[in-house]
Image 1 (cartoon, rainbow, N blue to C red):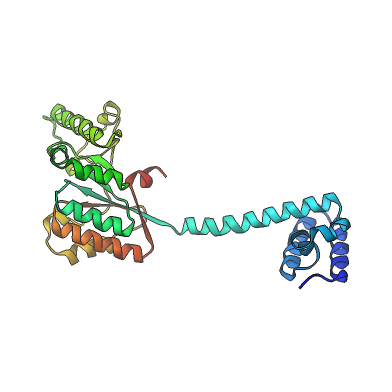
Image 2: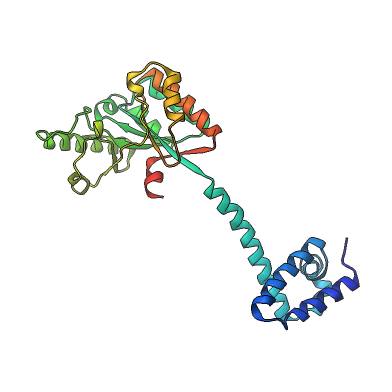
Length: 273
């Protein structure tokens, strides 16, 4: 329903009266009054939103500016309140896979992730990448992050530093040729790392916070339970895409954690956002 003549005149009278209040009290009163009038669709809110051409003769330019400003403030507060709450409730985790790609199991995993709209991080060996470059291309095209896991899954020791370094370089070059992008992330096998490589090779090491030891178990339910019961916001989950049970468990984990409200992101988003 439209506003009556009395509604309009009464609203204008109260609005102009409020300008005599101290600044803080005036702002508080006018915001509350504005909301009240908007809900009733009368007075100032009605004038501005419903029939500005008919009633704007009763408002000064200053009053119209204030109405516009208050409307913007209120809209902004409401929007950022909802948006901020949604952001604060967002629980992000990163699912990562080592040792691939496998010619069958990794493809199976990619199919499942695509169906669920989930992106993960793959730390691949150069040896397997050279055998299955088409799988690497698919990972990249479907939005997954690809990292370096050395060429032959070598573990860094005191006596093989240069060999380890050469494997990292060789694998990065290979992956860059396949994907067309620089490889910045590395997961050192067994977690053994030398920080000096970070500057020498411009690479960022990525370890993990949840390890279900999926590589040594053929029990899908057990692997799934180990992750689901331990995981928390911003965790990085370590799994492997070279075993059938690991891939089956990984997709069950994704399903369960999606139901719990988690969002899957790449390690880059966990570490730097």
